[in-house]
Amino acid sequence: MNIRFQPPAPATSCSRAVDAVTLADLAQVFDPAVNLVRLRRPLPPGLADCLHAAHASGALGSGRRAVIDAGSPLPIGTLPELPGRDTVDADVQLLSGLLADLTGCTRVGVRIEVLDRAMCPRWHVDRVALRLLCTWIGPATEWLDDRCADRSHLGSDAVMTDAAGIGRATAGDIVLLKGELWPDNAGRGVIHRSPQLDAPHRLRIVAAFDAVY
Image (cartoon, rainbow, N blue to C red; front, side):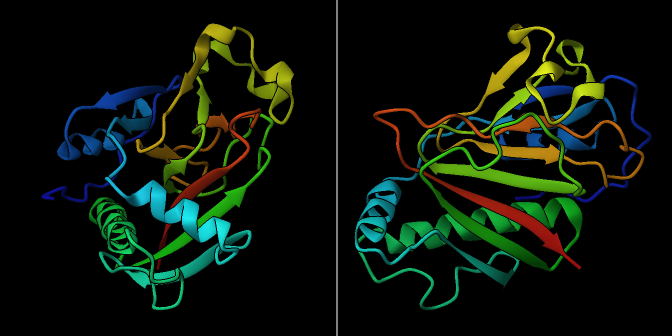
């Protein structure tokens, strides 16, 4: 993937979200003026069908958690052997490897969340350094542009001063979010929330990746 780790530079007072065109463009996250990078992409063929089948069988429950070597598939037994399982594993390998390239970590925490309602419906920031999110099924993560936000109201709808500042990912997109623990980023973590799940979208399956040191 050839994404090389770089030490972060000091952040600016107002951060922004940017779109990447290639995997290498995800390195824009090192720009101190950027706090979110989104790479649009379609879901790998067969991935959603496999997850729908696993959910229908009850094998996923409310989700799965694992710590893996970066660039490795999910541990045996995390998902049942269904058509498309290899596609899920390949995506986990890709996404965990991307995070490792960006952070220099060798181990990655993976959370697969199975949701029938918004997990974090209010605008908030995360106390992490850098998180990679990919929604596999259903509506994807929403974020709020700093210029349309009042951070003194974090945790409530009042943080949004202009709805024009809402950005939305779609299923399959790779989204990198800087949190409050990214060096020199305190007070500038990405303001984001989980989308509401209304009919016919009553199921959301999202994968979150965090560096483990």
